[in-house]
Image (tube, rainbow, N blue to C red; front, side):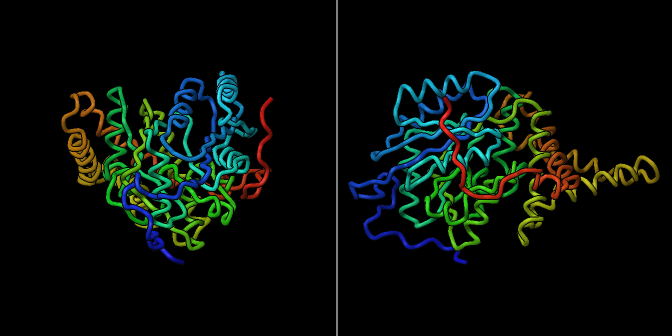
Length: 362
């Protein structure tokens, strides 16, 4: 397996805007899994249609069974612009929607965008340029978490910090290079077809799992800081806890499915939960000095939260410690309580692949 991208083409520039002088540019298919996105869908699609990509572009919306007016909004967008196409995603699950949209698309290049993502006008141009320059199979950039309320701002700060999410470059930034996974992604269609698309068994972590298979079949996943997408974090600690509990659960599913994918970074949260929890019980029931362990943890997350929110309003800074603790404990608890066999293969779940594009909604 190769982990080094092919050498740049001699005629390819080093800046996204000078990627190719070839007047024949590939059709780019932007695929979007959509569920309950009435509020954000029109703006998200408008951002895609306003891309400064000089070649042909289409947008394929995979519509799940929404409980709001999402389908009506989508139908209006398709009627207003022939570049917008609709397919069905009866399950509403993200990997099923992505596979349906990919199967219903025609582009040589496939760009994933979420229904509430905020992509800059040069996103597609920069992504395709980097795909061409590096020879990678998938290119992605930074998931730039930004909030508006004090809680959202504290969560955003934690998501941009190694204290909250570890060393993943798409969270914390860094230089361009080959990585395990990226946010969203700009794919060569040939790579998606080679690995069979997203594995529909993975309700969560489907991006990481797909990128693992791309790398395992000799492809390269490439991070570039030139791609920045605004991400809106969870608005409450309760919602954040559910999100990170699910991340932890599905990380264990990935580890049980693909040997060698579990490293010390992923074991740190469950080890912290076990160690801190055991020390707390021991301190309360038998040996008081053991309480120094949870006290040290609380002091660390408090100091860490204050450090990553320097310059923020006081309420945001006070919330940052609880946010970090919520992320750590929820992820660790999710990992420890995960049941991979039950999560991975629900009854009736189809096999991985790009088969079965949804029919256009009527």
